[in-house]
Every structure is written in C-alpha cells, then in structure tokens.
Image 1 (tube, one colour):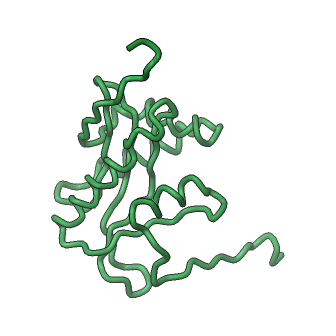
Image 2 (image 1 turned 30 degrees about the vertical axis):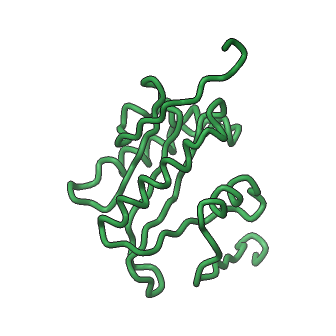
Length: 157
C-alpha cells in the first residue's frame, strides 16, 4: 500500500469562525496572496448572520482537518431575478484537489438550497479560470439568462 495516496473520507459540516486560518491558507495557496483581513470580514459578517438566514457556509474535513470550504446564499433582489442560490466562494486544499471535495460541497449546498425552495443556482467565474469553469461545467452549470457587464472607470478618466 505504500506509495498509493489514501482516498479522503470527506465529512461536510457547517463552516465556523474558528476555520478562518485554514480558509485563509487554502485561498492563499490558489491566489498567491494571504488575505486574512478580507476573510475575517467575510466570515464574521457571513457566519454571524441572524438565525434563519439564507446564508450557508460549508466545511469539508478529512480526519478532522479542513480540506475545503464553500460559501453561498439565497438572493432575490438583483435585476428582477427570482430567488436563487449563489455560490460566491469555494476552495480546496491543493493536496485534496481532484478528490471530489468541491463536488461534495456543491452537492450539499444545492441540497440545502432545494430545502429553501430554490430552483436555480448561480455563480460568477473569471473567463480565464479554465479549471474553475471546467469544474462548474462538469457539475452541470451552463451559461445563464443574465450577462455580466462592467465598466472600467480608469479607462473612462
């Protein structure tokens, strides 16, 4: 058996503020930048939401170690959109990539969204993030009914 990596036993639980350091570590491993202040604000505001809130933070663990996270919420106010689930942050420990962690977290949040009466889930991905685009497409995501537009204010100056 030596030399063969062990398959992770993924346990999903609610994300908590105590997971902050591991979320920062995982995010930094992908972005190359430690954004502790940003993640502190996100997690304290997001996870400190009132009871009954439609905000969901999930953690994936293997043997008690955080190997992935996902944050999402139900929103219904943008541009006449019906209530839908939004996935706005997902990250997996580099040592656990391609082990089903992100897909497990995505299945869990979709189940929770269904329980809240949601029938659509949305996210935004940089068009040059081929690995992230591939992940969402492999999990059934397709181009949606809205088009994201932006204006660069520095170019307008």
